[in-house]
Image: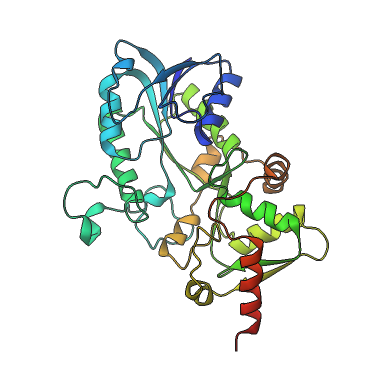
Length: 330
């Protein structure tokens, strides 16, 4: 097949490109040229900003398009007007749901709407924030359905993990626990969480495109219940040296200390959006999503990313200070 990948050089897109090439497909990349310029030297590159002139696509056609980088509905609409494609796949997110949702919710759960946010009664916002991200992705999904019709594949992942993750959220915990000692773990260990390895996600998306399988699917594993505590304990079982301990510091304490889910990655900070990390993945699993064992992902991330420094995460000195304050609280 001839596959166009929109945003194919950074993390998820990079792995989708690798999976498509490994499957023998002819790949074209549409990207701005700001990241991954050294990757895939033998692949056709179409350099353009999807917010601007897309004339580079005019007169071209592909058997399928995989869109990794749509954040605004106008971007999907503009793309549809600039290319001819047989199949269209949109990488969305489980953040599209109206919260709270019950654990084990399926793909037909109610979706978040911009109009439910009081400050967003006007035009579609032009910035992505924690509040607008999910509702904007809802609009992207609807724009895709309007533009491309029934062949549309919508994939809703939760946290994506694996090598080359520029966010480093999961990587932080693998590398921190591998260093051993007393590890500061944030909040409630019972908070739900789900992950999917980018390589498994990529291979499955390519197979779904090959088979022209439309529909909407959660790419989120394992099935609930699975908690943040389970995740960190699994990481510890794989990479922690002897004597490593997890100390769970309370949410109110950490918030009062000015910490966030950026400084302590994957921590939900009590956000009701944590409920979206308990999605039912059975539809995707039945459609062929084959997640590798979590401990294998942990081991491979450690092997590939052991020197990675997670942007914004606390350093050893700040962690030690917080642990001391937590232990000394009255």
